[in-house]
Amino acid sequence: MMQLAYSVSQDQWWLSGIFRDVNLLAFPRVHIQDFQIQTLLDDKYQNAILSVEVELSHATQVSLHLLDAAHNTIVKQSKLADEYQINFTLPIENPHKWTAETPYLYDLVLSIEGCSIAPRIGFRQLELKDGLFLVNGKRVVFRGVNRHEHHPLSGRAVPLEFLKQDLILMKSHNINAIRTSHQPNDPRLYDLADELGLWIIDEADLECHGFATIDEAALPSEQRSLSFEEKKSLIYGKAARWTSDNFAWEEAYVDRAMQLVMRDKNHASVIMWSLGNEAFYGRNFQIMYDWIKSYDHTRLVHYEGDTHAQTVSYPR
Image 1 (cartoon, rainbow, N blue to C red):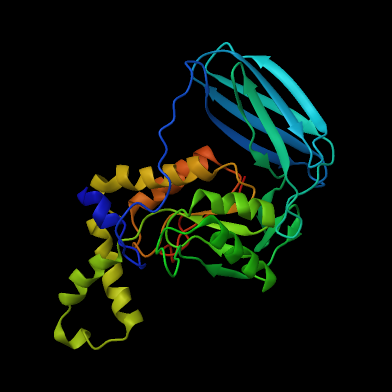
Image 2: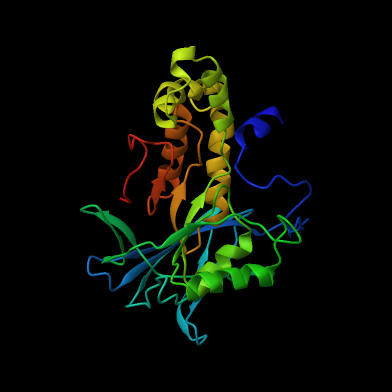
């Protein structure tokens, strides 16, 4: 609990209570445990490979159907898994491409006996070339905002209709990108962003800037009158020793990266992972980055405190 408290010191409204739905779910003995979807476009950004990796509780027959927006079947395939994991690799001819301006979604239906799931997916590919961020081979300009989850009456528990109108208001004022400062947002936001068309920089629940006050208080009197940036250059490297550059906190840091990616990995709107906010820089951010890139090589990684760009790269 102490690690939780020290690593989530975000700048936000601090309110008590449970803000999001809590569900207790029961599954049959044989069920789908997880799935990862990737859409890989060819060199001309025309045709695609739909890659779907499914994890199962037990080996069983798995069926995949891809439906377009008019509910026409584009492709279907069934496989018998002899292990607890099965992969589909399907060529898709010239699918509609997902962007914030053209948020075309397909329905992907994964079925086993007695159980089906139907996520909505978008075909798009992310790249960084010559210093430009490209989606489907075309330059994208972000006109974005930092978004905190607040409601004037219900605090951090934001009703769905209010959330939807918030995003529609952004779209109507030419905002096309959101950074989820400073933690993963309500899961329903990502469904709406997929549908309405918004680029999402998805941020991990990690911030511990308060440790800087320890080293600031220890500055000699002649340095206390320095500017913020001057004091920051003296303090932030030292402040990382408490958590971000401390091996004892590695598990807590990596857990935040894993929770972020595993929940939101299949959303077309999520185009970049953010490792957190205002937590200085240290070894644990490198390890977070390494885990993310080992699991999801299709997105860029961002971190506000990485002033020397040690843990950022383009998708492979």
